[in-house]
Length: 197
Length: 197
Image 1 (cartoon, chains in turn brown, green):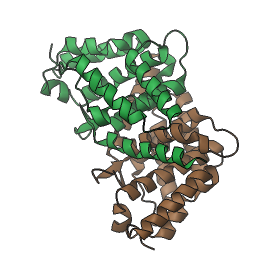
Image 2 (tube, chains in turn blue, brown):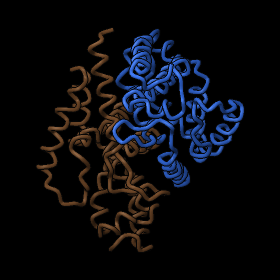
Image 3 (spheres, helix red, strand yellow):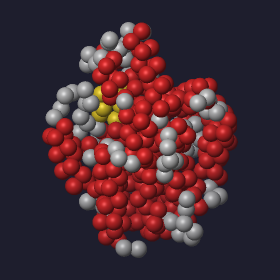
Image 4 (cartoon, helix red, strand yellow):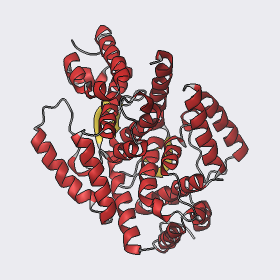
């Protein structure tokens, strides 16, 4: 056992405890309080396990998907959550998150830093089946929460049907069956008055 | 696509959102507020990925370990968290959690209900290398948090060094290198006065 290696690994494990304090705009269903990134990542990982059968094309490597969603928001420990409908400058966001990735993943030994950084890059680039599935889940989960929390976040920020449809669109490419479901949910939300036209 | 199957899967995904409201006694490091089961499960899953090299004996199936820790506390949606030092009757706890497992996992289609139930049973029985590793992580993570939160929960509930050592003991069998680390952490906590002798 290399004590320096273990020290780095457990230092990273301790540092990412902070992800539990990074709040998202989406609220939890029953308590209507802001969800945090750690809870969100757990939810996505569990969904990845349960919904993999709906991925079209070649089967995905589920372990890679799960690892990807577990670490996809870790950069937000430094960079904070950027609300998807905030109109934030994507280049500024990328710059902020890249600096965060440089610091955070490099707390780990080099081999693991490289693995997690590559998973994060892959998630952001959405070019592999695993990354497309992970991104689809990342779009579906807040949709489910917002719907069941009676549109609280949508109404609060004046989000419209077309914005939500556009945001959900990556679901279509990876998991078309879930896209059909998502479209129906969005239309029903409009009918129920919990999402603006 | 079978709409009834998808409806059941997403019903389960929605139901387990409640895990974000099940509070543990352990507190998060920076905010010193109670950690919840969803955050805890995310932390364990990420640790499972990063620390697998320390498992002794035959290599573990990492995907099975990750699935196991993602779902190991889901029964607490119904059964609530039972504090490990509370002296609760183990038979009563098992009965409560078994009823919870019967209800919750059966929200899923039968094949997935069976898979998740088997993973939960396996975690509880600690008879496989995967279950032993998952349990070791479940003991190590609160130890790390309690240490870095300056023993807040230990001091509040009057927990002693011997109780913590006993509770951490499953770490020894699965990941001896982490046991050595855990023992040092416990002794240091006593020296610093954040854990009673």
